[in-house]
Image 1 (tube, rainbow, N blue to C red):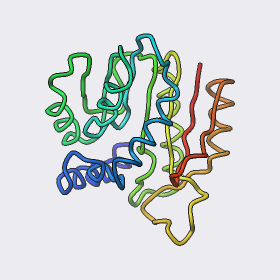
Image 2: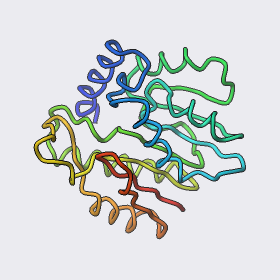
Image 3: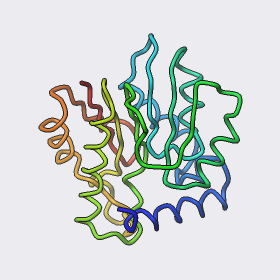
Image 4: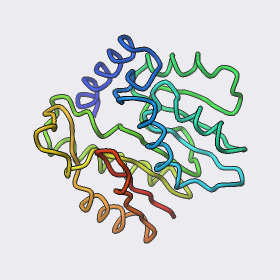
Length: 205
């Protein structure tokens, strides 16, 4: 797994160095798309009442800012494979006491929910079968350390062929929905009706 993810870590570290703590620094096009993406992912969360959440692939912590603006009470744990991202996130959010950022791929303790935004997109030179195995292993991990549910997104295989890049992974939405439905919960939602070249899957336990 380290061999598979090391090039990805270098990729995102370079993006952060070039663009800084903004959507382009985690390889998104802009703020509007990022906020739309967060709204889909956060539909797994309760609208009121406290919860704990692991942000898998937290980047510079943009999801934490979104949560602070929209949810009254929560505990946040951000993890990322890029040390540079974790350092940037920690510096940007020193005033938020109910948050912590750590380098890694899983939290040291269970949380109610997990959200993974964009971590399955950039495969760099990874072989397709190995990358799909990584996705399923990560979903298995998220299922193990969450008690109430999780959400993730992927670039869609329904993207325009002429715009697809060889260093990116375009997932089969129906295939991953089936994986989640059979392995993790009876309560699974596939969101593919928002204006981005991706889909979001919500798993509620």
